[in-house]
Image 1 (spheres, helix red, strand yellow):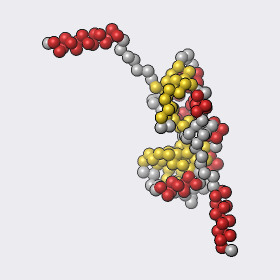
Image 2 (image 1 turned 180 degrees about the vertical axis):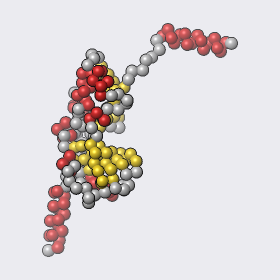
Image 3 (image 1 turned 60 degrees about the horizontal axis):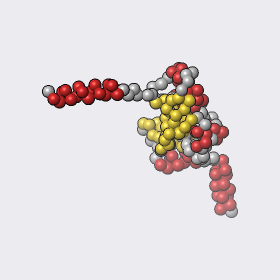
Image 4 (image 1 turned 90 degrees about the vertical axis):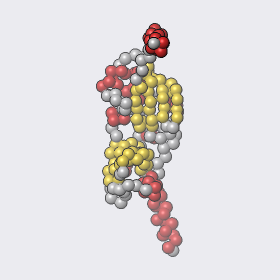
Length: 194
């Protein structure tokens, strides 16, 4: 009899908690998740992180002692965190996902121009490549980072992408032209000769 009760409790526990699945994500899937800061009541150990994942919270990065970045199911934001080691969940706003020193106003100005930009973006999990390719050409994908060449008109759309973790526009570095290079070589040669 006790085994039946234990089995029922075990099944009910697993049925009530939804585990995060951050693979093969699409825009529709990402609408279910929030990305942001997780403030814990104490430093979390591996068992704490595993238990939180079973409750719909995944720690992705440790920032400072009891402050983490991670992903959680949006439907748990309004639930009590009293029985967990989490003190507070704070969703990162869309404009806060823009990194690299560029402001939203500068992004809007760039988006109003023609041409292309090279960007670097990260997502909250493994996203379908076809979704990322809708924004532009993927130059490099490594360790969750995408370096891409995109049309400037797509920049605002990328900032609103629900799977977005961080996004930055890589500014072009001015390269010296050939005439400058020849002048520099002549100066270096004169210095060496003297």
